[in-house]
Image (tube, rainbow, N blue to C red):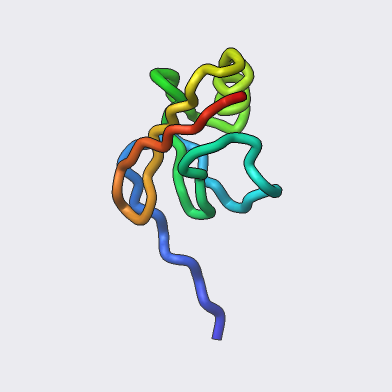
Length: 83
C-alpha cells in the first residue's frame, strides 16, 4: 500500500519549506528545522528560494537575522546572530 504525505495547511500562500538541512548552520541562535516554512527575513517576504537567498545576502555582518517561520502549525520568530 502506498502512503501519501498529507497536504500542508499553511498560514500564508507563499513561503519556503525547509525540506532538509545541508549541514551545520553558520549562524548562532534558534535554527530552522526540517518541516519549517519560512515566510520572511526581517520585513522582506520570502516567496522562493531565490528571494530567501537575496534577503540573507543583503544582510550586513553582525546584523541579526529574524526569520518569520511556521513550525508544527505555530507561527514563530527565529532570531540568529550573523557574524
